[in-house]
Structures are given as C-alpha cells and as structure tokens.
Length: 194
DNA sequence: TGCAAACCATAAC
DNA sequence: GTTATGGTTTGCA
Image 1 (cartoon, rainbow, N blue to C red):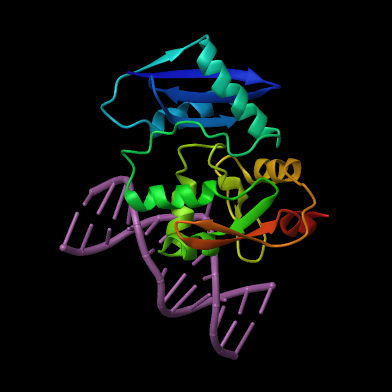
Image 2: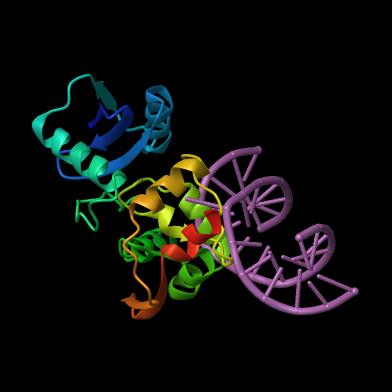
C-alpha cells in the first residue's frame, strides 16, 4: 500500500508517496491539486494507494526536508528512494543528477556524457523526475546556461537556483559512476538574468 | 542569431 | 516491432 501525504508550508504545497520503507515519488508546487495529480501520475499502476489528510510524524519529517531543499538550505538528504521499478538507464541518470552539489549546476549534455546516452534522453528523464526536488533536476540547464525547461515552471526553477547561490567561483569535477561530471557555479546561470 | 540535422532512451501504439 | 516525442546540441550560413 502506498500512502500519500501533503502539507502546505509557506503557501507552497509539498507531497510524498511512501511505502513503509521508501519514497515512491515526491513533488511540490503552488497548486495542491496539481501536485497531487503529479504524484498520482507517477505511482506505479496497479498499486493500491490512499491519500491522507494529516501527515504522520515520519511523513512530516520527509515533507520538512522537501521544504528545506526548496528553501535552498539542504542538500543530498540521503532519503530512501524507491527506484527498483525504473529502467536502468533512468536510474543511472537520476544518480548522476543527484551528485550535483548545492550551489552548482550542470548541463543536459554533461550528464549525458557521464551516464552514456544523449542529451535529449536526459531531458526526457528530467521531465519525468519522480523525486522532485530531492533529485535536483532544477540544477540541470542548457549548454548555453539558459534554463531549459522545468516541470514546475521556469520561474520556480530560477527561484530555486537563486536561493542556492553560494558564490562559488570555480568549475568543479565530480566523480560519479566512475566518470567525471562537470559542475558550474550557479552564478553562470543567474548572471543571465541580471 | 536562426535554422536544420543528428541524437537517444522511453512510452505509447 | 515501430513510431512519435522531447526540459538538447552542434554546426553552418
């Protein structure tokens, strides 16, 4: 049984779908109905679920972490994610994306290089990211450092990145899957908007 | 700048 | 199997 919980914090709705052990999918947004629809569209079909009005204590803990990521305060929360049912390439791309540190962004192409495959395939997987904002797909932008797309809207993507600004100045190389992933200071993106 | 062609895993038929 | 579909990239005028 999958249990779905939502909570509104500072007028943004956060939601998770949980089994006893793992997070099946998560989402957030201004409109509660949209967020719930999003959650429902991503739970594996033929799986029974139930929507709860009041989050349990452990659900509230997860929702609080989502909020803190949304606020640009927390990174790499190490929550148990249910990825077993996802295609293996999808898992690889999500794992690579999760390696982007707070304060940095990378590009669809760079992720493609580090996980194999092509940039468009990466974009497709970002678009279907079941674990927003835990898997930081908002930190993935186009090769010219314009935003690209975002499920929650480009305005939200920009706001998230703004809050994650840590004024780093140098490019960082991250090891993931035995490959190198280039990460660029989030300022590379933000300076296009000033 | 702007456009066209190459690109590549998924999901849907 | 086959096709359609992008949150892309690159090259070239």
